Image (cartoon, rainbow, N blue to C red; front, side, top):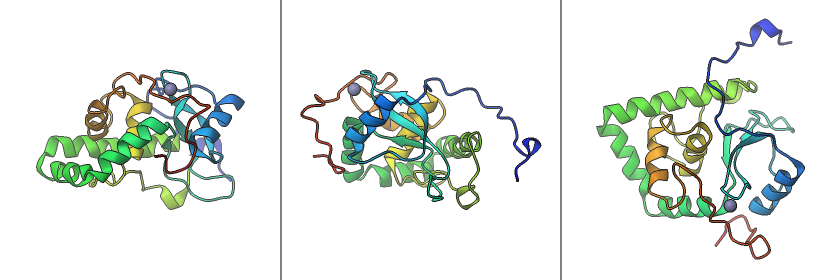
Length: 192
Ligand SMILES: [Zn+2]
């Protein structure tokens, strides 16, 4: 049993854009992902149109599965743009940038620690207690996971993701809506 004194009080500032997840949000995420979003704690960031963009998720899903992606990107247009960047080889470039830029590497290490601390605010899953997301702290393996953290936390927390998002039209620092009409939106998992 966890007693209250075993749970440290978080010293992190509140997430700047966090809002409760409504039934409408759950339906919107189902349309975005083509399946139910699991482990939803709250909406950490919304698109300019109000649809969920980044979901804060529980470290353990309802069925007991550990879930390390605490900030899960659901926004289709941004997901697609990041996938295109990944396909163009951006991850290898960013990883080598980390190897040659000590300041960037130090910021990325801090982003990793922040990720873990933020997750501990909502629960603890031993299997992923030291695992953050996106390849942190030394590699860049998933731009979607990194972008989720930056969009949820705001500028200055994850320098790699801040840099990536700054290169995407409408993504940074404000999230401007580029959603397609929901009646014609492609809801398949892969997008187009
Ligand atoms: Zn939108």
